[in-house]
Image 1 (cartoon, rainbow, N blue to C red):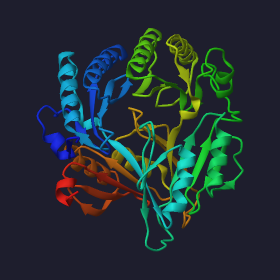
Image 2 (cartoon, rainbow, N blue to C red; image 1 turned 180 degrees about the horizontal axis):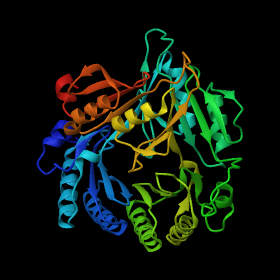
Image 3 (tube, rainbow, N blue to C red; image 1 turned 30 degrees about the vertical axis):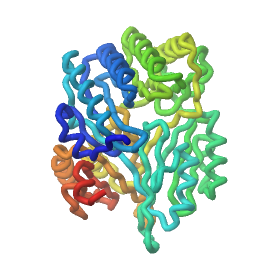
Length: 437
């Protein structure tokens, strides 16, 4: 019988001070000075995970390594996670790497639904997610889960979600057809073929974007999506936000070797690399989060990573790839941008965007409105933060123009932005004990 424990028990256990329990499992960020230094830690994690036969999710970033422990057999935390987390922390300390517990978080989305059973299939098709109880989850544990809150009666100004879902160009038609087959509908063809705007049976919207028909002028040093697709040696890659490739692996060892080789090449060329290691495969991205564009160096990096992956006998599966962006309708873009940067701990990108510097949460786009619309997109986001961060995050959101509309401290506080969108700034540890779960 697995020794399942609560998130609070995990955080109270000896040797887990680097870790914080969030939406699923417990997460730690170890800061590094280079990709190569991060790749060394990833290799040590592999050795520890193989020895324990318990394999965590690992995200290699230019400035750090994010590790998440989770016991899939109980869909929660166990003593195995405590033991592995303790060993990883000890190893990181031996390598001279410091943890940054305040920087970890999970972002989740919520849809209010009159008929949850009608709405969920649409979003499962659009995102390629799987259903777990009342949630839809990314099977590769990369993008935010969606919780569907059943409403007792109609609310004309209820939460309405708008997501931009970036998919490979050769997957787009299948993804659109699957969404329509679940009861979705096309709301406008104005932007076809750039993107398809679809709505679920209750009016929540998704733009499915595959960079088809892109005709904007780019600076000479940047590579347009069509040019990238036509280039030699990048058949495994797809243009999303930046360019990404997914390689299925026969286990953890193959994935770690690919990540290590990719990190060495990225350091040699001198450009950032983002790698997400899971037991069954690796997702790699080139293109910085602050703009997402591809230049000649990143094209070269993609080519060389593909060569390395194929040298390891790995096959690409582009259908796995997706990027997710949250869109807000905004009368006052700067005001909403300030609020959500504070609430989510995100960085500002240009005049209308935000991004997660660690590329672990969805990017954000603020769509300017010319005039008020009674039924515009109104968003509800859950951001799961460490307990020792929650008060400061709420204070920052309020200082940026928000107001607390519901106070359920210490477990969550709902803060509304200046135009009525809401965020739950939430904490997981202690809930099971308080609520008897």
